[in-house]
Image 1: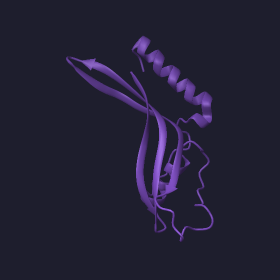
Image 2: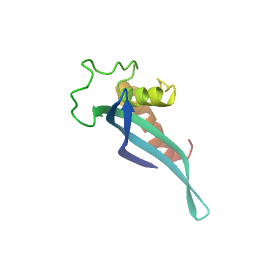
Image 3: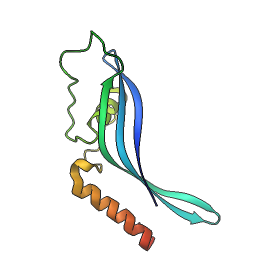
Length: 119
């Protein structure tokens, strides 16, 4: 198992303004050895927080912030961008550190998987 902290980054144009987006998360990758090769059997992500920031200070920025209607703090910006630009509905129950107990249970289950070899 590999437990790594990283970021998902991207740039999006929303209502004519470019934004840089970054989502911080812990990635949990489970691998098994098959013959002489390692194979990924699962990849899970526990979201920590995200940012949605204008690329340049612009005089034409809206006076009010983007109206982001998503209940989860840990991946609110990511959900907004994916829904607005791609029409994707994001699962509100994905693991995130804004629901610490759920996130820690997933990490513990993954660490135990290493000991038992079962998912």
